[in-house]
Image (cartoon, rainbow, N blue to C red; front, side, top):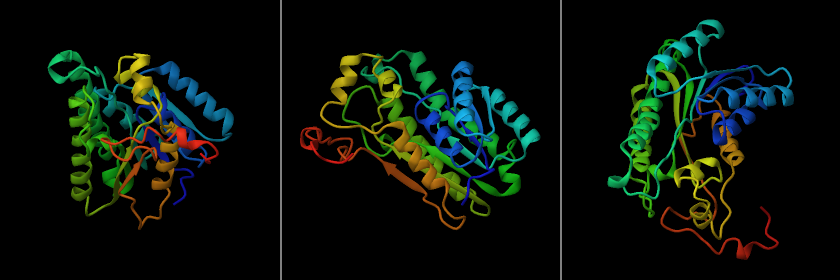
Length: 271
């Protein structure tokens, strides 16, 4: 399926995976709507994309997905002016407080994580289906960026809330796909493994030593790898759904097993 002219909403689009997906879909001539909290970062991404991809239209707005009214109002206005949303890339998410175990987390960190990863995830979906008129039209794609963490229990501390929220996203994705059975709406799950972005730095509180220790011995994904996987899933024919896709570093055999000799064996190996 060609993405040219498709109206694509990406949440969490100001950096990392969301920004990389925006750049990649712009290369397919999609029309983009970018949501995130930082208007300055969104403006910079939009300007960069429009400089590189002449003729591609990029809209952006500062929206906190935890705020249902804001999400609903913004999507309603965009759909009224541009038409129904064709694709939602449900990417906004965060992890806070690692390596603190659950009882040692700040309660605000718990509220923020669940507010974004669960409520915000559902609010964006709900608004696209309703105010974004995807349900009314009966056609479109919802691509939920979940995580391999949603399927495997992490072996490291500080993951209780994040793991639970990602497991919730997986369950929500599977049930939503079933509930939309009498439509042509695809509901897909993209599950990144370890990605070298600010996200993993954030989850350990920007403690560089913890970040370096976590990444030791292997080469993580970069955001562009995940964006490439997203473009692959979204460009399939209407009759084909890649309903779930794990994209991980080859060294990440599971969340329990990382090949930390990967880099040592890597001399002369193609990337």
